[in-house]
Structure formats: structure tokens, C-alpha cells
Image (tube, rainbow, N blue to C red; front, side):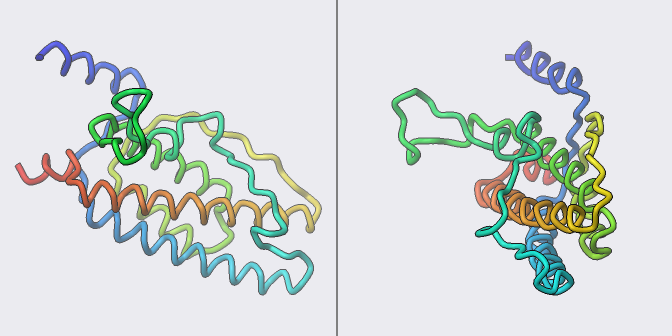
Length: 191
């Protein structure tokens, strides 16, 4: 049993991700606020577009910018006990909470870079969420393609905001689930 703990910790160190005990309830509350802030930022962007571009899920194709990286959706899914399990038989024992939290942090970091400067409240809320997670992650920065044309820039802002709205909702749901089921990190803080 002791050997498994050592191996598990070495994997975390090798990936250069360190998750420290954090306040799950505070993180969840920030994530709920983040969902609201993103929604308000989208409404403001739609008003700024003034009919030049219809910034909605019906008119814009959303691209998963984290598809080639470890992201919240991939990292926070519980594994199934067997290949014949149904969704109702899934359990959280297969979720690596450190990996899940590191993926949330990585998603926030990537999206913060894409959205930086669009909305000061959004910038502040994303930074607050990243600080609340207490994750140290040394992921390499992803390069973003620069758009010089104003319509391209507006389109990029629209797609980035809509994508991040979906991801912020996912993050909030993951943290709520962790809170409801009693996260290992919450238990570590109480001891």
C-alpha cells in the first residue's frame, strides 16, 4: 500500500502539477460567479456588435481549444468499473482529483489568455478562480493567432466567449459535484 502512494506522488511531480488543499466551497462560489460574469460579458459583446455579427450558439461554430491538451472534460470524468457499466453505475473512485483540478486550472489559464482585456470583471474573476484552486501548473503557453481585421477580431471574441461560457459551466458543475461528494482536498483541510 505504501508503494502505491509513492508512485502516485511521483506521477504528480513528473507532470509538474501540484495541488494543495484548497477551499472547495469558495472555489465553487467563484465558479458560479464566473458563469454569471461570462454571461454578462457575452451580452455586452452582443450589444457592442450592434448587429454586425450574430454572436450566438446558433450562428457560430464553437471549437474546443483544449482538444489536444488535458482539459476539464477529459480529466474530470469518473472511470467505470467495467466496460459494461451504465452511467448510473459510475463512481468517483476513478476520478483523480489532482488531475481534475490541474485540468480546470489549465483550461482557465488558456482561456484567460484568449479573453484577456475583453472584460475587466471577467479577467479579475478568472484570476481569482485560478488563485482559489491553489494549483501550480507549468503548462507551456499556447500561441494564439492574431487577427488584424476588425471583423475577424470580433468573430474571435465571440467564439472565445461562447466557448468559455460552456467551459465555465462545466467547471462549476464539476466543483459542485466534488463538493456534494466530499472532495479528498476538503477532507485534507479539515484534518
